[in-house]
Amino acid sequence: MEYTKDQIIGTHPLWKSNIKRWKFYIHSYLGGYDYKQGEYLTAYMQESMEDYESRLDTTPLDNHVRNVVSIYNSFLFRQSPNREFGTLEGNPSLEAFLEDADLEGRSFNTVMRDISTYASIYGHCWCILDKPAVQTYTRAEELDQGIRPYVTIYTPENVLDWQWSRELNGTYRLVYLKVFEGDDSGVDLFRIYTPERIQLVALSRGDTHGRLVDDMPNALGLIPAVCVYSQRSSHRGVGISDICDVADMQRSIANELSEVQQIIQLTNHPSLVKTADTNAAAGAGAIIQMPHDLPEGLKPYLLQPTGASIDSLLGSITHKVLAIDRMTYMGGIRSIESRRLSGVALATEFQLLNARLSEKGDYLEHAEEQLWRLFSLWQGQIWTGIVKYPDSFNIQDRYNDVVMYKTVLDSKPTNPVLIQEVERLMLAAVIDDSRKLTTLLEDFDERTEQTTEAVDAPESVAATTAGTQARYYPDGEPIPADLPPAYQLASNAEVPQGQNCANCQYYNPDNQQCSKWNNAIVRPLYWCKKWEPVQEQSELTAEEIKKIQDMLMDGMTNEEIMAAMPGITVEDIAYAAAEAARNNN
Image (cartoon, rainbow, N blue to C red; front, side):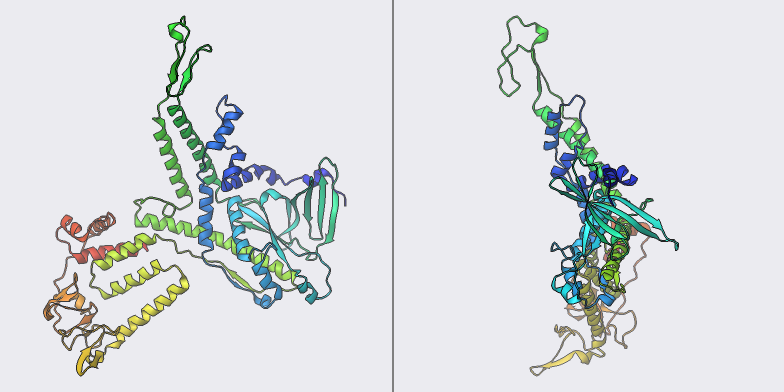
C-alpha cells in the first residue's frame, strides 16, 4: 500500500487542538533551556528581539511543576506494587523483562515510574509492548537469542492519530494507531498499527509519497498499545494533566520574577536623558560635557524609578505559590515555613491528596494489567495474575504528631491505656517501613502482654541473689527494696479494677516517686495495698480543651498554661493534648 504525504503526516483533530498545550506542559516540567526555547515570557511593547532574548536568558524559573510531579511519584512508588504473575511464574523471559523492560537496561519498576511521570505531565501517555520480528523455530532458540517482549513509551506529541471502534458487546477496541518514530538523516519514520498489519513508512523531506520500509502481519491480531491516563477526560485517548493549572501559575510567576529583575536593574542603573551632541555616560562618577550654548531645558537628567512595586510583586508571587499548594493539596507538604493550620484542615487536605493518589494508583494498576495481558499473549499464555497498587497512603504531618505525642507523655498521664496508645501512635509516626513497623508493633504488643501476665503475685518477681532476696521487673530492672511485698502489676486478678500507682494520691507524676514508701520510684501500671484515690478533678469544657490545645500549639509549657488558666492541672493538659493527637491522626 502506498501512502501519500497527507496520509502520513495527517493528525487526529484532538492532536491538533492539544499539541501546543502538550509542548507547554513538557517545557514547564523540564525547565531550563527547554522552557526558554518556548518563549513563555510576555513581550513588552516595542521590545526588541535582542532585549527579549536577554530577558529570557536572565529570568530564573521556580519550577513548581517538576516538584509537584516528583512528590506525587514519591508517594506512589514509596512501596513497590504487589504482583502475582499466575501462569507466568517460572517463565524464563519474565525475569529478564523485569530487569530490562525496554531493552535499554531499565527495570520494569523504573519504566512504570517514567510512565507515571509522563502521564502526570501530559494527562496520558502511550505504551506499546512489542516483540522483535525474528524468525525462530524453537522456544530454546528464542531464549538463546534473547528475543522477548519489550515496552516503549510514546508521549502524546509522537502519537499522531488513533481510532477506536465500538464492538458489539459495548467495549471499545483500538483499530488504528500512527506514531512518529523520529528522523534518520533527513528521513522521517512513521509506524502504523492495525489489528492486521504493522507497517514502517519513511518520508523524505520534499517527497509527496512515502516509502514502505517494513510491512509485517500483526501476530497478536490486536494493536499492542495501552493508553495510560492520569485522569480521564471526556475524549477517549486524551487525559487531563495533573499540572495544567500549576503550569499556568508557574508561567505567571516567571513573568513576575522578570518584572522584579527589570525593576531592580532600572533602580540601580537609572536612564540618562540627554541631547545627541552631549558627551555623557550614566555610569557612576561619569563626567558630562555640555556645549556652552545648551538651553536650560535641554540639560541632561536621570530617570530613576522607585522600587516600591517590588514588594507588591513579591507578595503576588507568594500568593500564587500558596494557590499552587491549594490546588495540588500540598499545603502541609510543600510549605517551607510553619503554617498555622488546624488539625481538621490538615487532615482534610491530606485526605484529598490521599484520594488523588489513590485514583492515580488505580489508573496505573489498570494500565499495568493490560501490559501484562499483552506480555502473556506474546508468550502464548493467558494472564491470570494480579497487580495491586497501594489504595491508601499514610500522609500526615509526622513532626507535629510526634511533638504532640511527646507532649502527652511529658505531662505524665495517669491513664495506663492512654500511655500505651500514645506509645503505639509514636511508633507508627516515626517508623516509615511498613514491614518493620508491623514487627515492632507485634513486639510491643507481646511485651505488653508479658508485662500484664508476668506477675500473678508479688513473689513471681522474686529472685535470689547472693543469699538475699531481690525482686525484678519483667525487663530485668531491680524493684526498689523500700516497696512492700504486695507491690505488683495493677492488671493482676487480686488488684481492684481501675487502681494503679498512676491514680494514687501518694504518686508524684513529675518524678514517679511514691511518698508513702520513702519516695521510692514506682511504675504507673503497678499497685500496692496502701493505694488511696486522688481527689476527683473537675471536667473540662470544650472551650477549655480548645484553649489548652491552642496554647500547646503555640509552644507554651505546662507551667505557662496553668498560670494562664488558674484551676487546671497537669492531667487536664495531658487530656487536651491526647484529644488533639487523636483528632489529628
